[in-house]
Image (cartoon, rainbow, N blue to C red; front, side, top):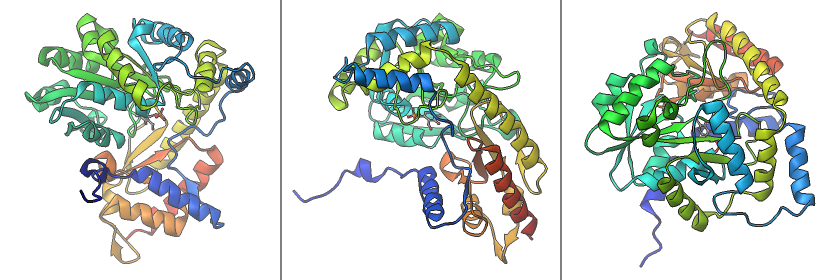
Length: 399
Ligand code: PLP
């Protein structure tokens, strides 16, 4: 036996989002005044009441193993949140708490996929879905949302993409990277197809609290008994409560799927961090004012940034309705040249922006849309303006 490595592991694409962010950090460290639009996490600190609860957990010795799928207290708090906010009935034994949303999603794919099962992923997509599906021995199948439809896919498109190998459909609303939100009517049409064709829907609702204007988050599982049975709902505390480092995510599913995920988790990681679980009970059941304040601030930045970007040359952008990202079509800019060289790809454009203008943006090839870039507004208004000034200057230089 030679010292070969796993083919599956070798096939994983490292996250390009993290690579750009790392390069921007490196430049910053060397003294360059970089503006980073790459952030996938709120720039706010975790609210004080949540931090205090964690301190209490440590001081009172809540520092031991908990049940592998999470504490009864946190499951009860999540069950109540599912009922009050999502209109969903998930009893505590249908809930599995994991080490962040990523871990929760990984558990889902591991629980439902057999080798060769297809998973339909609407593009643009969050770049981790295809890699997660492949790691669970599934096959990602991409369906492209039309720009005219807010980059969302239609029920007809879903229906057409389903084969006898299709096991599941991934629905991410509000969406990373587009910031778009599926309406109740759109979800009803998708639900009809999902039930009729008898596939699972993995509903990633990580940004559910972050919707703006008239957009309202609707959980697809809440639309009827049949679709409820076909859905595994996933969410977490990372984005809504500025708790990305605490690593708490969770799922609501059938008892049968919850048992499978819990068994796998019990061997892979055991329970999620006991202190973070204790603090998450406070996050979900304590005062919600800080969360609302963060959301209001995101909203102000969203409007400001959208207005400014919309007025720039060679770009096309839609006003996002949720999450904290602006998804920008750079097709026109990519037809231009910079310093005598054709731009062609958003990766090249991002490289020039970082090297010559000290602005980090996310090129979206790994999100299934190579002509687009993603800008996060999880940075201060002052940074937003500084960064947008630089992008505007760059665009005006294009020939
Ligand atoms: N789902 C989406 C759409 C995300 O954007 C993210 C994080 O970037 C996650 C899930 C995972 O969140 P967590 O940090 O809790 O693992």
